[in-house]
Length: 253
Image (tube, helix red, strand yellow):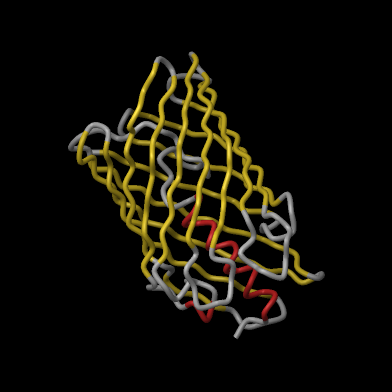
């Protein structure tokens, strides 16, 4: 069993999956973009993360593997299913691994005006993970995000505002807010640089420190139906893992 501090940091990290990383419509960003994938389009995304965190001079390592199939029901409405497998290896405690809480969500692009696009992204999580190890909440939860994208030429700017109802068996805070913003810049038709910054409420009732992150990476799109990406995420505040390395691939049919 993980000690309480390691456990809370682990669950805080994996809770972030559902509010901010439930689906990477523009992987490797944490911040989602407003456009949808289009009617009849099937999208499949796989990604992996490796994290390193220093806790009281002790090193903790973590990993996460995710698979997210998606389908475009309408031109402006998508449906996503998310599955992830995670593990953590504390230097001074027992390691733990397992499947996380599965989520189901939709993405509704409800308004477009000139270069602005607005989308709602509601979702629900199911308690498939082992909450005693920090890989789930033990109860069904739900969340909703408002996504905004504005594009000008080679640059696009995204802003997300979110709320998660963190129903849980862990005596955590149940009302979690999220805010993040990202910038993508097209170098060529195939290569794109991305940057992301965000924060959310800490679910740990004993710690008022807000988890904040900063991310930088790039995307390679050899065709309109395939993307490959790599990124580095830095934990600005203590609840976030110090260093996280992200890699992923997305294909569309």
